[in-house]
Every structure is written in C-alpha cells, then in structure tokens.
Amino acid sequence: AQTVTQSQPEMSVQEAETVTLSCTYDTSESDYYLFWYKQPPSRQMILVIRQEAYKQQNATENRFSVNFQKAAKSFSLKISDSQLGDAAMYFCAYRASYDKVIFGPGTSLSVIP
Amino acid sequence: DADVTQTPRNRITKTGKRIMLECSQTKGHDRMYWYRQDPGLGLRLIYYSFDVKDINKGEISDGYSVSRQAQAKFSLSLESAIPNQTALYFCATSDADGSNQPQHFGDGTRLSIL
Image (cartoon, rainbow over all chains, first blue to last red; front, side, top):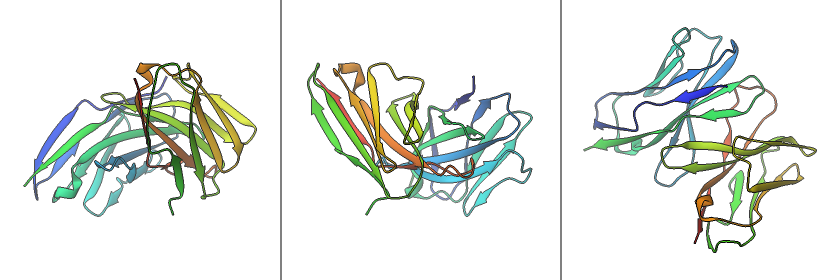
C-alpha cells in the first residue's frame, strides 16, 4: 500500500530565511503525482505546488520549490525568503494515476519574526 | 461564493445522535471525497465517489455512510456518533480529467461529540 511520511512534526524558521520540509513516500507505481498543501490557522487547504513523477525538472512556484528525487522516493519543499504568512501546517500528498490521494501526517511550520 | 461549500461549519452534539454533514460544489467536478483530520495523522479518506452512481470506502469508513444525491452534492452521515469521531471533516472535489489535478477543499466542519 502507498504511504506518505513526513518525519518533521514541527519546524521553525526565521523570517526571510529558507526552510526545507521533508516528505518521503512508498509506492510501486511509476506514474504518479505529488502535491504540497498548506493549511493556515483558518483551516483552509491550499495547494502550494505539484509535481508529475515523469518530469525530471523540479517544480517551482515563486518562493516555493521542490526537490524531487524519484529513485529515493523523496519530495521535499523548500520555502525561500520565509514570511509570517507562511506559518501553517504543510501536508505532502501522493496520487497514483486516477486513484485517490494519500496525505502525510503534516509538518507544523512556525515563522519567527 | 466558495466553490466547495460545507455545512455546518461547526457542530457540537451528543453521543448516539445521528449527524449529517453536507457538501455541495459548483466546480462541475465528478469526483468527491470525504476526509477526517486528526492531529498527527493528517487527512484520512473516509469515502469517495467518482460519479453519481459510484461510492467507495476509504481507509476509515466504519461508523460512517455517504450519499451522492447529485453530481454537486455529497453528504456524510454518522448514524450513531461516538466521541472518537470528534475531528475536523473535509469535503473535496477533483476533476476526472488528469490525475495531476489537485483536490479542491471546502472549509471544513469541526465536529465535537460529547
């Protein structure tokens, strides 16, 4: 069965600094998709970034980028120039083709002014 | 207006009560999902539906049931609520065309069972 692991329950970063959140997953599939979602205190689930497994190039969305290592089954999220509004719970998620999404347990990120 | 609307936003009820959480969407998506979120466990899938005539159990369906009344509506019921069903519940939708499409979430229902 597919699983998603986030080994850092809590992280903190100084404002304007860079932080990396870790995610690993287990699958026997070759075609799948990976996502990072952000959940601020308002509890909305907001898509941050997505990555297709067939693409070697790492996805980037403004200050957010990923380091996708397919062989290692690793999908980390890097947040550059951290802002106070980045404080939230971050969930890594996996989806095989046309299948349901599996979420990791989440990492709570604090941003220190 | 929100694309995915959940009602109620918050609910406190007693053990043994029947509860229905409702979800409606204006995105025109075929696929709808119900999750529960617990601290340290992330989001776990309760039920999902890929179209109106399709209902599937997720990893934690015991104690829950669902109804897909229309493409736009997917409700979750707790037939006899128990305290360990206290959680934050999310409804989500996704487009059938393309697995790279993200899920779109409602704002959640915080359910407390006393």
